[in-house]
Image 1 (cartoon, rainbow, N blue to C red):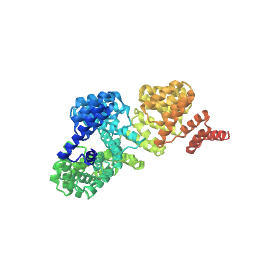
Image 2: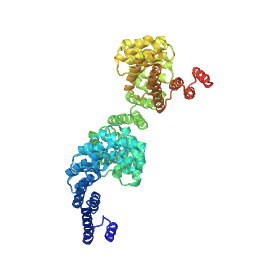
Image 3: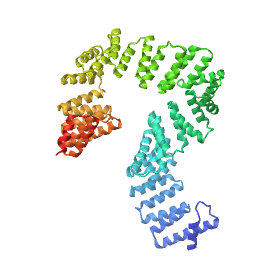
Length: 626
């Protein structure tokens, strides 16, 4: 007997047993069954069933488990073994029935849930499969593998993408508090990248795909996908980096050669020829684009033009075909068509924030025809976006010379005010008022200049002129409230803020300002809290609004809530890179009131480190000595 057992242990089950070995194994099982009958033991039948299962003799295993359960009818493990035997015999209905019995006697036993999931999958009942895993997760939320299986099911079979997203986010949240296998973290990030891409939240998609790649730099599928997304967004420097890394491993990839060829084409880099030539094979759109750009570079204009026009007919926002067609038209001396293609390319490059490439395209247009006002306008926008305001003003002025525009005059005035050249700003606002006295915008911007100079009476007068011309503009009423507040005319400021809210019930700034005014004057505190909470509901990540809410709770005497909201304000403002001395002062005041002098002084010191304030210095001196 012992020799037979020894033989069974050393024979790997993956190896096909010969007939002699099979006979020996079954004889071993028969002996066990006779022994069980003799002593009538539930445990013996159970162990014999396990033995038969181990040699994949499922009918005999099932027979012994069913005998065992007669003696131990509340054993979840025996019910599970019966269910698992039925599962292997492909009787999924009975597998489900006995799994439910196992769960009935032990809800925390995971295996029956997983077996039910597998049974439902084999029956193509995907909703039921998902629901049973949901039940398991409620009981054992720490099971990372179940979150993963459930997320994959929701994504691949049920197309319930929001539920899939929750599952994969849960995996990453669990990874913050426990050790999670790299596989699960990698593919949670991978799936999240796709899910956010499908929701058109492209920045989040890129973030998660990059996280997956950091976990496994060898996942070239992600490199491929990232390159495509980045190139679609015209993040060409990043796309070039990923494409280059991929090509180091797979230098003959048509797709990636095409991608990097298009990047070099946009950059006017001669290396485009080599990569486009490798990427031009195949009948796909990407192959056709590579072929057409390649033909343009080697001046096979007829072949190139045909392919480029086919591409633009279906995808008019592709940039490189417009540039290629402009070059072909220039070679044909068709300047008007060349300019049209260049202008379209320039606008698309500008929208993609490829400012250097866009500037080069617009300058190319000016080298052909320097009398197009729209070209100067876009050059002005490019320079403004990269904060080169002097050059922006130069080009806006040229655009205005070619085609005078009130809005542009106002905008030039605005740029001068950003440069603190208030005299020039005023000059342009005056020009705009003279040309179109009914336009409210120049009055509004001019009022901001006088407000900046602390000339509040003139600022108020100009703002009221703007309001006469556009009564429903909530922004005008909001800024009028600021000017009235500066003159200590708070009752009138409150009226202006209420008017701003009346004209725009989504004006979060007005809700917050009005709520803070009430809190600061220590009046209408409950209304103050309601107003600020409305502001936060519109802008939930605005740290300044949480500061206002904390201060309102401070005025109400609810120190716990006040401190909680102000600490949120502190974190949000730090994340924005805008720590606020007022917030630190408020936090210090709350710590003082709850008698934590050390913390109070720490926060007051944070405040004066950002901005000197004599009153706060006095508080530090006063309480440090106590």
